[in-house]
Amino acid sequence: MRLCDLIPENLAGEYMSRLVVRWNDARKIWGDKIGQVPYLDYNLQRSRIIGLAALQDHTIKLNPLWVLLSERDSHIKDEMLGETLDHEICHLVAWKFAQDRGHDSGWRMAMKLMGREPKVFATSEDLPSWTKAYEGLMNEMKQELKDKADLSDTYVISQTDEV
Image (cartoon, rainbow, N blue to C red; front, side, top):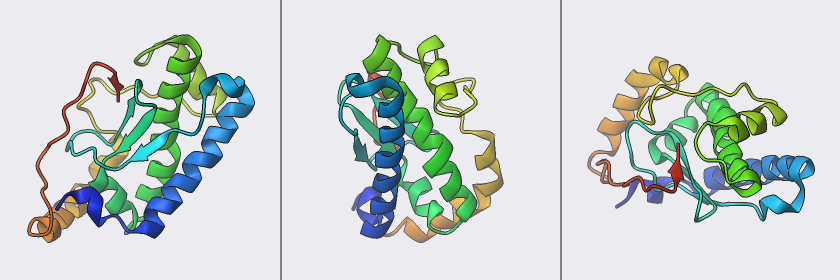
């Protein structure tokens, strides 16, 4: 079984609802050029990545372990539904609006216009600083899930993905 299969429908619905709200906020700024609400995928099995924007697929991918943890801790949920989703939305906006990739000026401007501080991590394999406080909780969840789902890093990052 895949980790994404363990995400309850109500939790997935909460993430999708937040994505729709924030995408509509972005549409108020940039108009219809940014396109329809992106697809939301929970099959990002990479231990060192929380979210990713697949530019060519117009998809936001979220790490299923962090999504599952967000059900247990309100701070994690606030970060995931806020900063993480907005970070990935801004990658898609910058790509659609200006063909801007990575954390360049288009992404930074999109973050500011969406009301976020444009935070960039040293590499694509660095987790946000807030995650360090939850390493114990993450390890507990991995122990609980090890017999229920495949926990291996299975997602291969492509050249059209931005983290």
